[in-house]
Length: 74
Image (cartoon, rainbow, N blue to C red):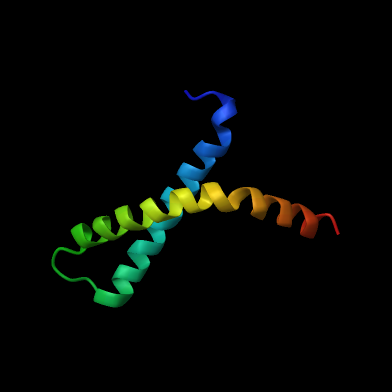
């Protein structure tokens, strides 16, 4: 288990992993269809997407949380 003080990083890792996995699969399927080697192509696209998504979420999450709090408090 990971200490609760790392909750933000764990959330970012999970959210970026799930979202990039689903989106890269959907976009790969839309662009290529079910071609031979689809899973390998998808996993490569997912690794690239995850490498971009994880640090992006780490940077954007605090801003998004503040904005969400302003929107939800009205």
